[in-house]
Amino acid sequence: MTLAEGHPLTLGTERAPSAASGTGTGGGTGTGTGTGTEGDANRGGYVGAWAVAGVLLVGLALSVWGRWILSGEQFSPAPILGPDRMPTWNLVVLRIEEALSFVEMAALFTFAVVLPLKRSGRLGLDAKIALGCLCGSVTDGVLNFHQYLFAWNAHSVNLGSWAEFIPTSTAKQTRYAEALIWGIPMYTYFCIGVAVYGCRLILRMRAKNPRLSNARAFGTVFALACVFDIVVENLVVRLGHGYAFAKTPSALTIDAGSQFQFPLYETFCVAMLGVLFTGLRLSAIDAPDGLSYVERGFHRLRPALQGPARWFAVIGWAITTLFVVYHLPFQFFGQAGNSAADLPSYMLPGR
Image (cartoon, rainbow, N blue to C red; front, top):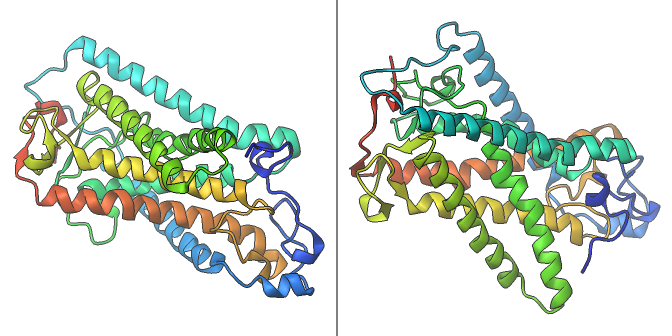
């Protein structure tokens, strides 16, 4: 299978379905619900439920970030504690990592937003996923909202942390450096970045072997995503001292007890995110109408709600997936951990 000319993901927008299907216009706003037999028969999909989740989660994210921004002292760079001093060459690597992450995120948004707008004046699934990843970065505050499990380097470009503003948070040490320049971009290249290349890989594999199973296709994406995660994260952890895993189960950890201890469940969870985002994107490529499985059923809504519902559905799915697949397991293993990292003072939280 190859990506056909004019496919929704090559244009960054969905293909306009036939009038009989009742799925609306290609721009995602829809012009009707359809009255034909085909339209009435298509009653699958949960776009409404995902859209409601998206509205609630976006509202939560805006509330958390808004309270953080208006908090005064909490919205300021975290203190760099002594007596340890970060080696100059590690600091230089950290700045390089920040620059590369920002450039990568800018390139992905150019691919997902700028180019589709130039080609067709419309945005498609990639733009929705990209926005979902950005909104989903609010879940980074979950990393430390009960215990200090994820240690940040105070030398990173930062304005503190929003952890204490997340509902149910019991965080007492919140003056740490939530990395803005390299941390947030990670939510794009480990999710939509992997998805873009994962889809290309699967399409090439299908072209060579039309009988390729989904298990083998997604298994290959998972394996490569694991390699990608191990390489990228260990470069950030070991060379730039960007962050550290403060508390982990020693039985599941490489270099347990050192500053650079690395839990194996980190790679598994991050790779699973890549697979799931690949699956979402591939579902639109495989569908004759260019709809992802999250957007299915939007034609049953009133025309004015169809476009917003599709946007909020994808965003809601992205935020939920990030929380369930990554943050919940991270909390489960971290809080039960028995291996404390030997951290320099500039990676410890202030008060």
